[in-house]
Each structure stands twice: as C-alpha cells, then as structure tokens.
Amino acid sequence: MNPAAHGLDTAILAVFLLISLAVGLYHGQQVKSLRDFGVGRKNFSTATLVATIVATYSSGSSLFICLENTYINGLYYLFSLLGLPLSLLLGGLLALRMGEFMGNISVADAMNNLYGRNVQLITAICGILRDAGFIAVQFKVMTKILEIVFQIESGWSIWVAVGIMILYSAFGGIRAVTFTDVFQLLTFATIIPVLCGIIWTKLEDPSQVTTTLFNTAVFNPKEVVANTPRFMSSLGLFLYFALPAFNPPAFQRIIMARDVKQARNAFAYSSIILSLFFIIITWMAVLLLAENPELTKEEIVPYLISQHVHVGLKGLLGICVMALAMSTADSCLNASAVQFSNDILALPSDSEEAKQEGIGAARLCSMVIGFGALLLALYSKDLLKLILLTGSIYMPIVTVPILMAILGFRSSTRAALVGIAAGITTVVVWSILWKNGDSIVPGMLANLIGLVGTHYLLGEKGGWVKKATPVTQPTTT
Image (cartoon, rainbow, N blue to C red; front, side, top):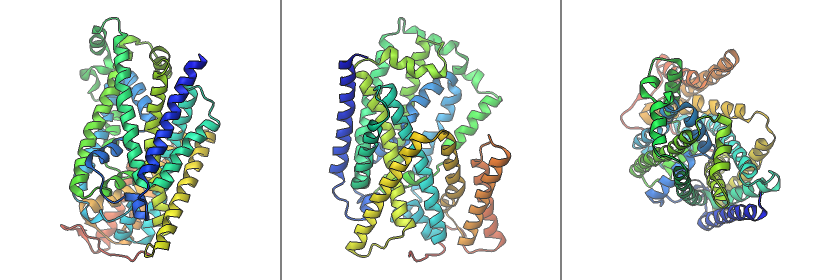
C-alpha cells in the first residue's frame, strides 16, 4: 500500500476518534448522580433520541452482515430483516403503556418494583451478560476493520480505539453516549450513500440492475414466498426480530424520554430511519450483484474494498463501520454499568457522598466490562457461541415478565421466579438435546406458561389489570 495513502486513511481514523472523545466528554459534564449517568435529565430532543436508537440498533457488524446476506439470499433475508423496524414500531406503541416505569433507571430497577430484590438481581446479571457479549462482538468488528481497511495490526491500536470509547462512556455517562451516537450516525449516513453512488457510476449499463433483479431467483417474490423450509426459516427469523425484547439499552432509550408520547414518537421515527438504512444496504448489495454475480459470501466485502474503496474513501468506510460498532458498544456499556451500580450493588443515593459512590462504581464497572470484553474479543476462539449463549439467556428470562407487565399482567414474586426457573431449565435442556436448535422461543414459552400457570393455579393476587400498577412495592435496599 502507498505510504501516503495509508497515512491519509490513518489520519481520518485518528480525527474521527478524537472528535468522538471530545464530543463525548463535552456533553458529559452534567453528570452529578447515577440517574444523570444512566438516563440523563430527560431533556433530550426527539431527534436526538431517534439518532441514538437507530445508532444502537445498527451495530458495526450489521453493515457487512446485511450486505453479504442480501447479496446471497435476496428476499429471504430481506423479509426477515423487516422484523427489526417492526420491533421498533411495536416498542413505541408499547411505550405508551410504560408510564409507571418512566421514573426507573434500568429494566432491573423496574423489575424490582414489580417482583422484588431477587428478580432485580437476576435481571441485572442477565442484562450484563447479554450486553457484555454484544460489546465483545463490536470490538471484534473494530479489530477486523483496523486490519482489513486500515491495514493496522490489532495490537496497541485496538486498545487505543476501545480505550477512547470506554473513556467517554465511563466519564460522560448517557449524555456522552447519546451525542456521540448522533455524530457516529451522521458519519454513516453521509458516507454509505456516497459509496453507493460510486458503485452506480462504475456500472457499464444501468439496465444491468433491473435485469439482475428479474433474472435472479432469490429476488423473485413468486419463488421466494412459498411453503418451503427456506421461507419458513425466514418467517421464524422475522418473528424473532419483530418481538420487542426490551433489552437493557432499548428499555433505557424509553425511560430517557420526557414522557411516553415522546418515547412513542422516537421509536416510530426510528423504525422509518432503520428501514431506510436497510434500503441503502440492499441497494448496495444489488449493485454489486449486477456488477459481479459470481462472488461467494466471503469475497463480497474484500471485492467491495478492492474495487470501489480507494484512498481517503477507504478511511471513511472504515470509520463508518467503526462508528456503528462504537455506538452499539457504548450503549451496552452504559446500560451494564448502571445495572451493576444501581441494581447489583444497590448503592443508596440519599446524600451527595452516596451519589458520588454510585457514579464511581458505574465508571469502574464501565472500565472492567469494557476491557474485559476486549480481551474476550481478542482471545476467544468461538465468540459466536458466546453471543448466542448470552442472547439466549436474556430473552427467555427477562423479556417475558417485563413484556407481560407492560401489557398489564401482574402477579407475585413466586410466580415470576417459577416462570424464570422454567425458562432457564428449558433453555439448558433444549440446548443439550438439540445443540443446533434455537432455545430462545421454547424458553420464552416455558417462562410464560410458568408465570401465568403459577399465578392462576395458586390464586395469586393481580392478574390482568386496567391500570398498570405493581401488586407489591418492595423496599429497595
């Protein structure tokens, strides 16, 4: 590689990282309590909330995953992908029922009000494990980008990049995370359309695109939509994507809003923006397919970089993916730090000294989880299995009781713990008996049966209520 070209791309990366650090630390100056650290002061504009929601859902790996799978699987993958914007839309509608949770600081904090301290601890632990896995994946993406795009060995450079993200997340809190998300999303929104334009101008005949779409089986709706195992698999993935999981960062984005109406609007607008994001990536995949239909899945990204990404633009593409990876990682890191300090340690906040202890614990947790996830990303040989494991833990355990509570179902701590135990047991047994099977849906179903079944069999107080209020209000210790 030309040293001057390499220097230009590296300089672009350095400027991006420094701007991210400056933006994060500048907007994090108002952190005076753990609540400021976790949800801010509820004075974010709707546009800012939309940006951080989209940036959080658009992970660093999503760009290349969407590109590769759309090129290879066409409408089969695009149909499944539609579940993600639908999930945001449904999440916004459900947010209108979440008025009672707007004073909480995390999803585990809400579970404490609903079902007590033990359920709060379980939720926080599951949430931190889930987020740590997602953070590790984003760091893995950042490592690959440094090697493939910038041709920098993943030694000290990845530690510097991750260190900058951890620094502004730990000391700036949610305001730093939110406003760096805005900057990082703008970076992506500017660069990717430009790259699509470059690929378009290099096509010998623009009619290649329509010819490719009409003559490629995976883009033919009549062939795709059918009672076939491949389409049924896409349908199952669509339903999985469409279910609002209310993971820690997503729940956090709702309670950051001024009120439930702003949360609803932010999620609704985010579903539109995320759809546009997928449309752009789809268009890029179609252009590459029209230009060269013979690529294998492993050759798509290297072909894109070698044929269409040159000096300067290579650096811009690199920071685009880095931006998406950092925006997801910093959101998960902030949510994990809040759950550790507020929900596991349960530090009091009735004095200035206690408030500072809470912030200090959250900052320390950010550093420990952040650098721990980096070590995991660098040295784990089977990171994918770890991510599937951490992801399969959260939804069967936490999503069911919190989603039922939002819909208006109330029960006892005993019923919630029975449901959680049923979900955990099903996930473990299912994973042992069917190693390649998806244990999330069976685990969620078992949790639901355990929760509702125990409630009615034992005659617990609560049930379906018109006004969403907890059955018990346990004292936080």
